[in-house]
Length: 222
Image 1 (tube, rainbow, N blue to C red):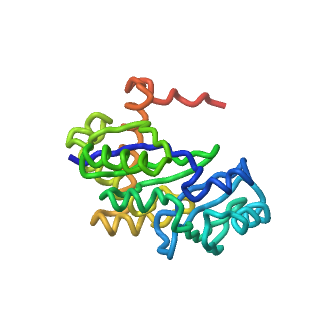
Image 2 (image 1 turned 135 degrees about the vertical axis):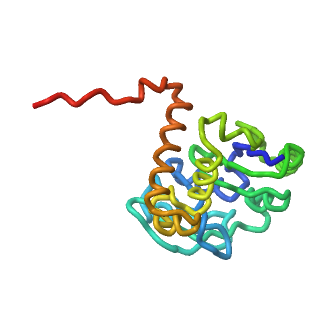
């Protein structure tokens, strides 16, 4: 049974330790789509000059190149030194998939999908053996009833998963609603309505809001 594990890992020794030491305010987020020779990471929390000075002097980074930039953040293709513990590679070698990864305050947070809980245990032991001190923050099984526990229908659940996998919720979006609707084989309007119902179901479920509470009161007249 597929499982999802959220794992915290200290950045020291995993490619970003030197960067956080030089730039404590640094924030990092994995870019999910762009293919690269290393890892494409969005870096922010400091000026570009500060970030690039830290990249240039880091003993944990073998090479880096600027790929793109956005407001106050920069996307770099980064290759970690072979002697550094690469958490992405470790996850891949243990049969997992990194769904998302970010780092701040000298700590990685990885959301990892694995075949079953035994893979999580193996991954945890592998990280411990590399002296990086992982912490399992959350672990749950993707059982068939998972979507219904969130108040979602199976189609709503599948649509949200497809939207995440195709980068619909990324900033900026990596796929348009029309492209996503074409991928799912439904109309633009049907996709829009399905997403709105899914959002409502998730908010109602996660915030424990009663259905009647989600009905907006009438707007006051002028």
